[in-house]
Image (cartoon, rainbow, N blue to C red; front, side, top):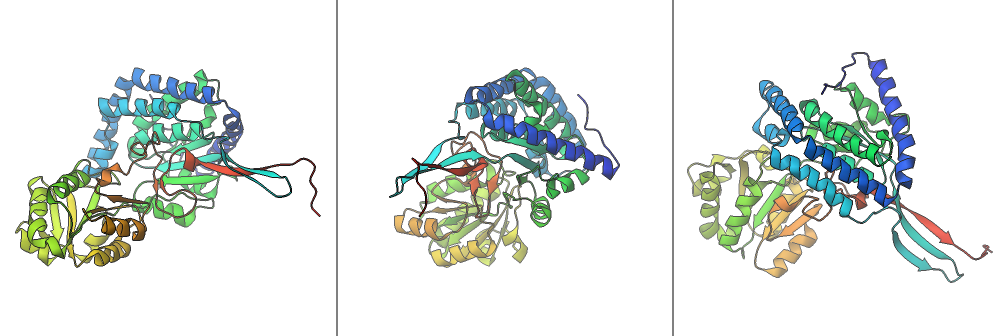
Length: 429
């Protein structure tokens, strides 16, 4: 196991990245034409390699964790970075699950016949070469590589320097799968340098060889990608996730959902960051929910009503309503009604995931219809905001934009389409 080569010369990195792009472009054609069986074999063999090398991956991850701790990484980053036996097995299982999913390439999405006898088909096609820029989570290496491959794309992966050892070994397992299936190794390429200059080269498009970029990381990374990219971006913005306790919410159900939504894993993008409580149930629901969170070790930052509910609450600032904590902290605010809750979410949210807890079906329908987020939920934990939980096998990220891909970016979102026009000799008058 070796760390990535660090090249200090920008021209050297530029040439390296251009070569990566060209190799990936060549590989993209082979992958686009690969059979379903061939792609599935690559995935199954990669999963087997991950299981066989689990001990090495965990040892590499321990070194990554040590380096991150020495650098002063916070708990949220360490949680995202950390691998254990269960998470390594989950990676391998994810590859096997993707192999069982229907091949999205070549699917006829729609067929319609014209009066002149032409038959027109809209058919799913590959995107080409996908660049994935991510931080911390080494499992993204497996998820992104596998999804791009099954969708018939080549990919170039640029992980963060904090997970460099873990991601390197996982990538080796993916390459072993490609080789076993007779596919080009460049189909899943990994940037072999940690210099940030490499990110800039990807954002330029690598000489026209990149077709789309998927950023997965903190707000500053996503902002840079959106500002500088010269190719289309599937933006994964921060997850300022809300849970709204409606006037008709069942308290026991609300307690169960809020606890899970916030505390199951605080470092994931689907973790609840703001709790909104309807004025109508302040007397019955606010104090129990706040107490539940505080007793579980979660800091609560609240408005005046929330501070009055429990002396342990920290007064919230305006910035708290706009913050993705990714740790055991939640903001809490009392809202006048459903309209006020929707207004708050529209003002402060990131269009990622938002939930209403209520037994009033009409209120739930209004919330689901009017909240403009990629994922809207009713009476379910926001931690279900995950491609695997949606049945996609895995996800590269959750896109919060409105173009092409929105929500979990899985196989279908990693495809485009073309039209096939079938005639019998028609000419246009």
